[in-house]
Image 1 (cartoon, rainbow, N blue to C red):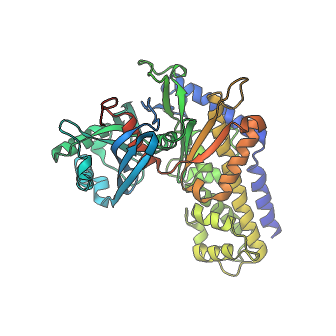
Image 2: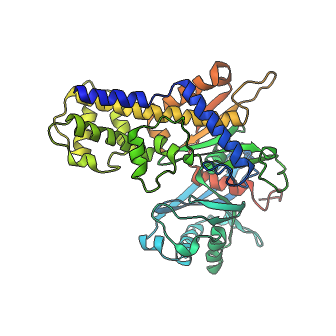
Image 3: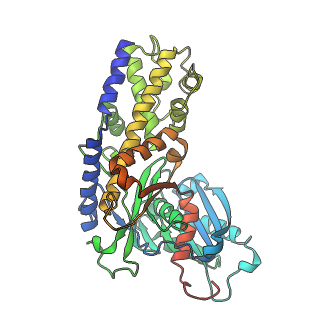
Length: 466
């Protein structure tokens, strides 16, 4: 037990995130943000992608808009009826379908023909009073959660596939054009009005009902942040300054790294054995996909070096990613006097039986160490964004308010992560500025957010009876 406690103590020390260190992380991120906005490739870590979203929703949008969400093994379509300032979102209908596995590795034509047919079936249930008049097209927000180089609000070329997809003939092609071809093939009267990613959608979803929203962040399986930037602060933007004077920037901050990040041997091993060594380091210490595996690796080390679970090492402890973040949260939140939830999870996930109360307490402490580091670093990232936009301080005579919209399973389901993130952000900005900053939950950016961006980028804006 003494050896096990010394492993935990060492891990705790290596994961420490004092305020000074968090400020250094935020400052390092700020430097990379400036570089990424200056010119393409100037920051090796932060892409700072121009999204071409110049008009965020105002809450005045009216009409019927569609959304298509493609980001994993399912596709989802939504029909969103907007009623303007008075009625806001009147009605939302949605439908979901699994993508047959063979289509994920087939051809661009086959995938998009399947998607177009699914969309057409969904459109066929549209109430008659919402059918577009002659000469009008339905408008769609398309959430495509794979790396793309955007060239306008309605075009983007696929850089590479991630997750389970591998359709070679689509790499380097414009995904909007391919979807449009498939829709035209079957006579579906619809145009893509906005190509977006889920983080930008999170920002848009919250902005629709709150004009003070300036940042959207996702803490889920992965993590990313988007924020509203002044157009004149983007040297690499060489087109006309948007009428709004603003542009939404997609930071792709999961790839951030800095010597100031408190990384341990466990983090280095996890990274080395991952499918993308040396990449997405920030994501690997703060997002839902990895937190459970950091805990698992620490438990394995204790089992091997300190006989923590007896003389033999439980075989299941050696299985990567077997411990999910939501299971870790359940153990972390266990308030029973005998830590029954921890006991049950260790038994059900790792087949570890007959654990002592002291061992279960140490498991809870491990979860604590890992999630507190993640939440405090996440807060440092948000603080970096606030610093970049000058919203980390209160300016005399100004009544500015800054709202950060957050979404994702980790933020929603892991209470300790959420509360620690919020309290750390308050520590970083100080009492006075904390009064001007708020965090709110923005649900379904990839669905509703995409439909709202289709509305705010509609080709019929200003036309009556839209």
